Image (tube, rainbow, N blue to C red; front, side, top):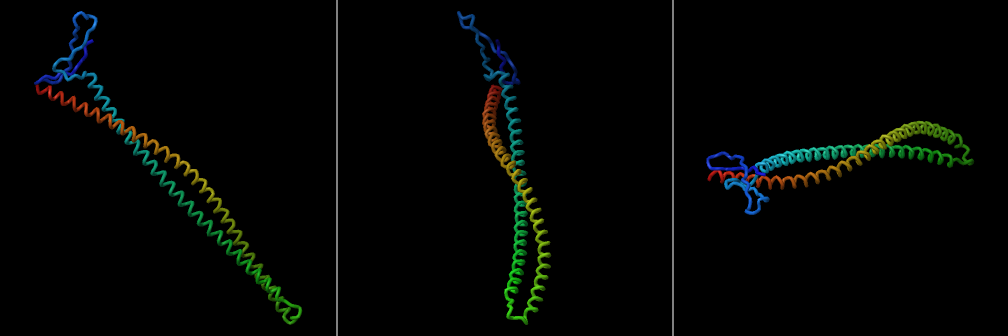
Length: 230
């Protein structure tokens, strides 16, 4: 069947023409299409297909570039969120450590009072009858003071323990949230990096194709210009 080609003549706009068909002598069953002498050797259909394909590749290239930027933005947001959760986890660990230190300090003061009372009791001797009443009064005073201190410290310790427990519970919740976000972040990061790598590879391949097609289009345009000058 005849094929449509681009025909360029000097002083005329490019036009679509059909190639001539001819047959070799004694081979009437075999016919071949011959391009006109003034055509550029590329069919009009192929030329249009090439332009359309180049347009689609350019559009896909732009879409892939936008998708790549979106993935990078998602990765950056996940990184910032991970940083915020990490800072919160550090802060709660510091609070927990401070409260634990306060409990230890109060426990140490109670032990000091108990040791002082024990020393006072050990210092009593039956030989020192004149000091018995004095020591008894001192022991009673110390015992009363110790009971008051124990009540005060016990209440503070209970409060601190409750605060520590609450802090530990909150810290555990933050830790679970942090671990969950960390897993999500790692998953998004790995997936995003893979997708970015794949998109970069696609963009590179598409860029090469677009470059080749652009070169072909320029070559065809140059041919058209040369034919137009004839």
